[in-house]
Length: 528
Image 1 (spheres, one colour):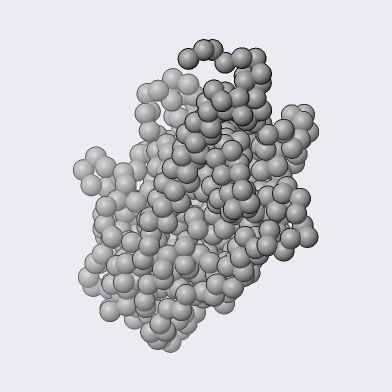
Image 2 (spheres, rainbow, N blue to C red):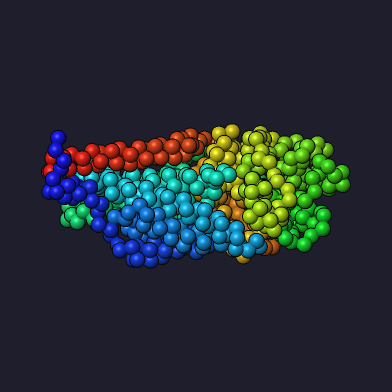
């Protein structure tokens, strides 16, 4: 076979050439940077949820037609503009190093995902150039690759950091009910799918053909039309939740027993309230382990005896050389009758992974964390006299596996304990509350989210707040919450949703690359 002529090579290049960039690089960098800022405004505390779609659109149009290198740069700018704003609360007490390190790490993952998306925009129109390929397959793959990146950041490294997922901007939007069907991953997928479908509808320049808008219209109909999955009412349960507002921050000045004293003081006014089924204290509600201190044990016995109800508290416990962030159920005269240890201790906050390596880089910061918590292995549920309560301690709530396991173990409500004292005056507590709100809708369960300092709220299974305490004030709520049974599709499907989306999108991208390459070879050889 003779070598291809110049004309044949030119013909082949016309087939293999990437689409022209939608924006020049300088404009793409500006648009992506602004897009990251706009995207952040969709999340609490600003919470203008429609801006999530605007931010996603700005990110996607910046990637169309890019080379891999420039796509990486554009994605990095979007990621930095988003994360530097979104997790700025990490710098409150520890300064810029943790904030910058976390933001840069997460942004590198965003940049990697951006490369995959720009390859999808290059390869899929070649592999499937018809309208179905452009209007259906391409948006599906782009949306899938977006949530693949979210899945990676949510699991790697050191267990990941699933903060800032697209769905978490929608806790108060009309689309929130979708999480009961397909979870946060599925909602995020549909959000990006809608944006990508609208972009392709505009790009095909066939606006008068109503058929071209069908993919975007169907996606919007799913987002708006899917009602929350109905779980089954199973009675009511009265929860007395206590916000002690004690000196619970890492750098707060305090003496031993101060946190216990603040929790006891805030509990005292509600001890004579009739019908209390359980008293709930926040993470760090006691700075003394009552199983190792007889005086504390007697104080808790008095509280539970006067209220005629058990107390669910949280403290630090030890087993041998290991430390645990532990929730325990305390009953008068019996002591601790059940414990749950936090399943996902926070890396660089509650333990230091690869300590020697990071200590060499930042000894002053790493030296602040003297104690390392071990991950728990017990199921995140307590049996409260026949009523099953699902549990999560602080950042546990952002991990799907903890919440899904609680529901599968029979949880009829969730009792969430957290300590936001290290992030006073920042968006962190409202961002975490938004996650709790979505968890209520996702599982079809009531949620009591109690914090040491706020924001503490009781949320019904529809995501509506039914009781609340002012932030940074001591107080207590006595709230009748609805119990529910039955599993939502989101809980039943669990990890099958992200795995299916990941395998399908990556597999389709790979297939498109192979088809496009084969077509390019044929074009060069044939000169067509």
